[in-house]
Image (cartoon, rainbow, N blue to C red; front, side, top):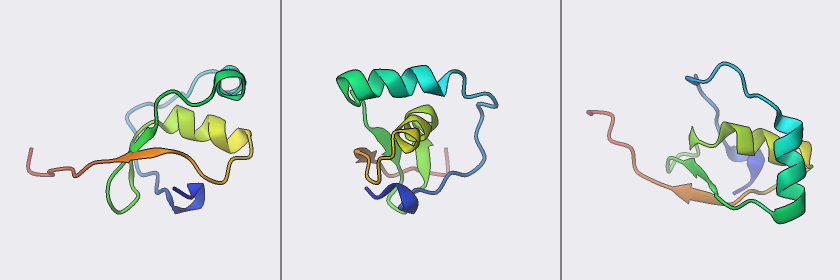
Length: 72
């Protein structure tokens, strides 16, 4: 998915931690787990991975798309 199309809304996590180290790891071994988005492109899980990939200059990122039931 094009990184520019991913919508990041309010998050539970306030501090993202050491994104530089994560970016180094992704550069060395790749992205092992895709980020998770809703069908409309809203980020569900993986903000740290998303930010690390942005730092690496990626324009696209692997995603897993899932339906979210807001009633639960």
